[in-house]
Length: 451
Image (cartoon, rainbow, N blue to C red; front, side, top):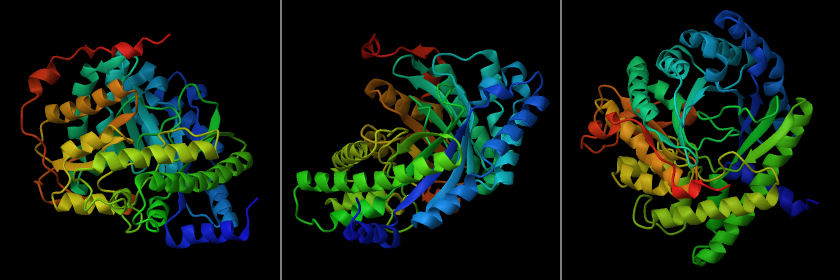
């Protein structure tokens, strides 16, 4: 039972500490929508998404008003589109445009699932599908795309890694008038999960029910505020405080998720308890790490502090819900976290440090602006490095970098809203083209043989 102190504490979390439900995401299976032509499939996709998610925004707004908890985003994820467009892969864009049209009609913020799973190999239709991504992301507003290029069980598909470097570059070129914003809607994964509610990497896995509600909670400001009362506590006590705080945040998410699923006649999927920052001050993962005692995020000690934070969040969240899933960790997107933005502007945090931080958190090199003249093979090499970390450590890793055409190190890009802004960061200039062009498959590690 809640007592009056719990209620007052929750009110404070919402009003002063940026506690919110970051997203209510409805996952929808598109497998029943496959027809003999792209045009008929696109119409079936549009009709199903509009039917299933017709009341998503309305229900989310009702729940927000009833419980007093802000619900920031209402989103939809769908079956990876490459799976339903195989017979007419060159015409996959029709389905992409239909999905974006549905998102606009429903008033949802983003729709994820213009995706492909190519971690062990690419069929001809999948390669054809991947090549449609730049045009589709440049021509749509709310559609997001993701590609899984590796896993701990299968290894890393380096042919797909090579191609994705080229696709990222092409997407940036086609959206250069918006600082490469198309790339902010494109993420390349290793060990992608089927129930992630966060964009741009959300898709509805083939092992999921027909319609599912997944919720992502967020409260970096709540965690930072709780730690501010422990300026001299040891790290054991700090971890306990983070766990207790994550427990409360996750409870709020489960309440919303279960009620939303009930009202929308969908199955309750998971609560993703990731700490997802925003560009707003007081809502930063970087500032949590500084609250723990770092002078600035990016300095020595950052990886250790992040590891403790991530572990404590998971432990607290798992105790609060038997349905924890998705990514569930701490996100470190540069453009979406005011502390990361300021550290990057000051040159205190580098790509190398962000890569090291990836080893202990979710998800990877995320929302990072790089010079527009960065070669495609260098981007592929960045993807390969992150995929290797995910493969070896049996965790989800990803790359979402934005080549900023016409801009150099130190210049700024701006996307607005939750996508934020970022300085263009330097990349290593060593040539990786020969390595990338070798192609083939990086074999799975020995620990993958667990049966």
